[in-house]
Image 1 (cartoon, rainbow, N blue to C red):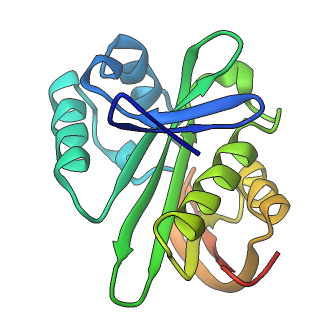
Image 2: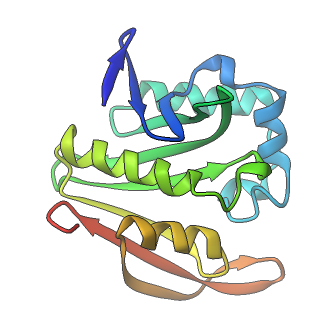
Length: 182
């Protein structure tokens, strides 16, 4: 993990992660957040998004001491393909939640989310001294379930019929990974 120009910069094999900047709040990002296929598992899907709302969200993430909000950038194309968020971070209990989005559909199913999760978990453990990272995802979100499992997250529980998605109630799977686990 490296620091570059004072901003967080984490380099992986296929991607690098850097802080989301206001220049990332553009028409492409807005399309992702209003695309029903891309945002079908996000709670923000229930509300139309605007550039102003996205700017306010990015501002709140930048000002927060409990969140790390990063852009996922393809190393070869130098293209912003999604975002990953670590937070809220509970500094007392040393745990944090993650959430992520691969907005560019051409990158789906190719391991980019898995690498982003792995990099953020490593950063949380090694740099922030977090003890546990957790996540939740819809049971119907097969790609996210696979990515979590590939990184080493363990299923800790299921919230039965917890969210309404695509016309029916679906389960939420809760995942966790502890620093001492592989």
